[in-house]
Amino acid sequence: YTDVVTFYAMDGSVMVMCNVTRESLEYLEELPGLNHQELVTAFASHRDEIRRLAVARYATQRKLLLALTKNDFIDDGRR
Image (tube, rainbow, N blue to C red; front, side):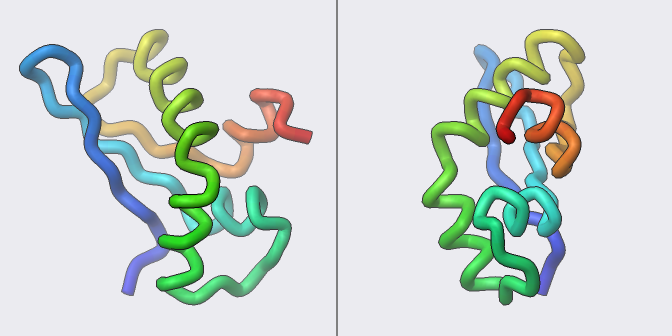
């Protein structure tokens, strides 16, 4: 059980680990209290938006570990 969903992206030969927090996924789904399977489903449902934000964050920060939080989606103009 975890409070993040992790995915990996490649920048050439460099692997970047990206974590999306529980709070982010619950925000995107507009539904608190998601169980682990529901978090994975929420990630899949919002994959394109999550990836787009991760690419934008990586482009400015160049970190090998990104953590996307609820505030990242709010700051991005999600709502």
